Length: 98
Image (tube, rainbow, N blue to C red; front, side):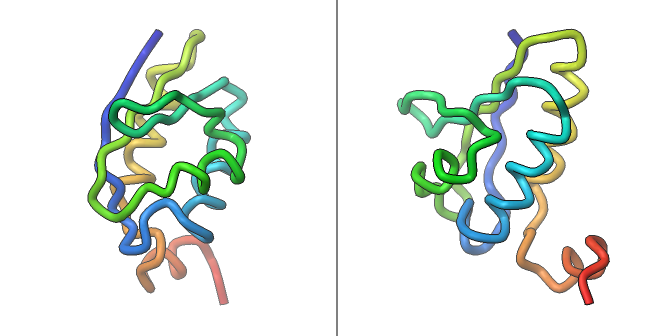
């Protein structure tokens, strides 16, 4: 099983829009991924309700885990996503929001 640890860069943490973008990316990957806070139980990273229920604030580290042939690639992409402030105006422009 592949694992990555990353600090959440979004200024609101994994709440609302950042959680939605993250869970959509997980679901689109086709790889089962879990996310956990330090010392916490892992939850399904494709579930916005589970991800938001973690209550991860800005700057806190989370651990992502996945299994399968594309696990490393998917986790690397998710780490890049979580390392970005998904509430920043640049994130809106990159996402094509109007």
